[in-house]
Image (cartoon, rainbow, N blue to C red; front, side, top):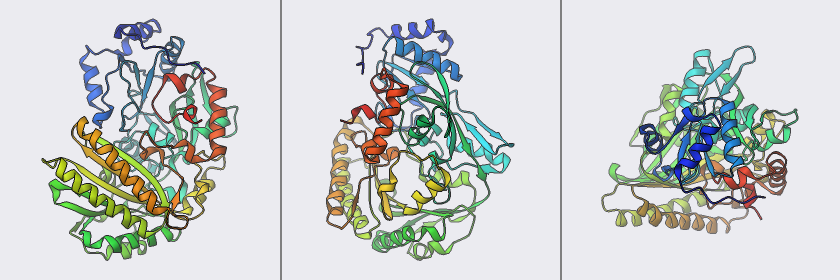
Length: 487
């Protein structure tokens, strides 16, 4: 594998390469007002790095031109889709070139096939708005501002995972720009079937996807909303979460998130429940144990998909730190995580005297049903490796949002320690700690691809060697989780 060349010091050099490739009108340099606007448009402050220049291709051919120019000159680059991933370097680069796919944001529904073609930078709120004109929807993101590309390349847990598998399982075709600038179509049975599989959860190890073609499903009203509850409901809520997870096969239209949060500007500690039924069944049986808990407010109603997207929105212009893990469907582990979060929240309160921060631990069902639905929808398979989870599980996301890089540097190891504390406790329970790490919630220090299992790691290695023998996406494109980093 080739190594990264030293970055050219003059920011004009990268721009010159792209101008010579015919992309002059697509380039933004630090002197351009639009350059600053694109940097500020990242939702998380950690991602607001300053590349030497930004190139904004408006077609797949132009993406290919950019890749050929940069790879040929061994120049480092980043790939930006929706720009939602929150760690530094995931979708932007300091001193290199950011390939900003913001122009590739279309959503096109094909009535004859009931398929939808999605651009990688389309936001899910806009995808749903367009498809709902045709009475259709796709198994996509659960937050309005998340982009299509990163979500699907990370697997993608959706409102519909119980019925249709992960978001990636619903992709039937990828249009991909490879490291040498070739444009190929990857599907389940063609010459690039290996590429098709490893793109389903494998991050950006083999190319830039410029179009995702997805199955659609009928759309309609949904029932759901958010409830705020006092901390006195914590233990009963943990039990209800375990019960809900164990019984998801009885009501695959219902989905749920159980969150323990600390929001000092809104009263401090709180339990949050996000409940949805995608068939618009009001207060379904699956939620009765949860709905019986004491509450301070709820906005449950028959509503629209667009409305429920807003309930999981991230605060903008903060430094957001995330870690994730998976454990057995066990209420005692949820309670341990909540206990450790409470201790962390007190440290945050002491350190951040203006109280301008938030923190949480969020718990989402990850039942064995998800694996079965994934297989039923996608016979070609993916590389997520969830088959390793032999029983029902819980996916945990732990997060902190703070205002300054200094506070982020202080808080990061604190959150990492919380995660290690939960892991240590989970190991005391038979089968309590599970290996799988969800890419879309992971901290850059976490071993995501390794958690998919050795067979899937080997599939990704082979696909990367075949489609990118020069290691362009391994060594010139540092964002994402890299197969070459696994020893």
